Length: 168
Image 1 (cartoon, rainbow, N blue to C red):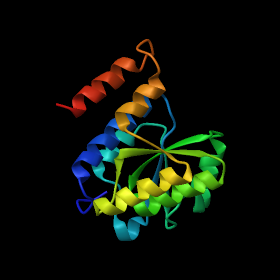
Image 2 (tube, one colour; image 1 turned 90 degrees about the vertical axis):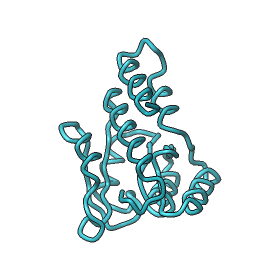
Image 3 (cartoon, helix red, strand yellow; image 1 turned 30 degrees about the vertical axis):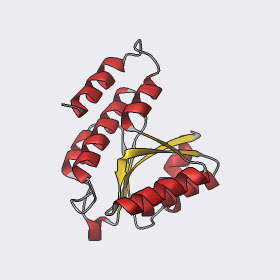
Image 4 (cartoon, rainbow, N blue to C red; image 1 turned 90 degrees about the horizontal axis):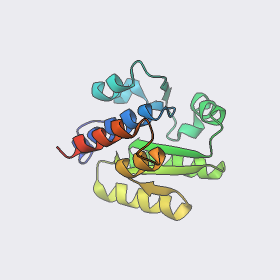
């Protein structure tokens, strides 16, 4: 993610909150980096949050994570029917991955405030297309509380604090 992505500061902030919340809930995380040689590394602030966790990382040159053998094998081994997606660009990598997940019988859930494109119209059209194809669109706050389910969950306080930090 780089400064050429529309509203990237907000997307980075939401992505970091999402990662920390998923870590608190002990939900597996996978990082796909698109063509690092040409596009560069994942932002240091995002990588820093992932370090020391059980996140798996893969480099890819395909737009869809499902077209990369290592990424696809990792997704399939998780034996999950729902896959959360965030990242850039919404109208290329996120879109193609979501459509391929649907083709493989999985439910992609796009974290709409943690995805971006260079131009807002591209993101809008990608979200619209994913929704029409059967994908679910949600937000960081919504998905974290949905996964938490109750204020009795041990991760609730962490998630609540993370969400509060978004608005300060």
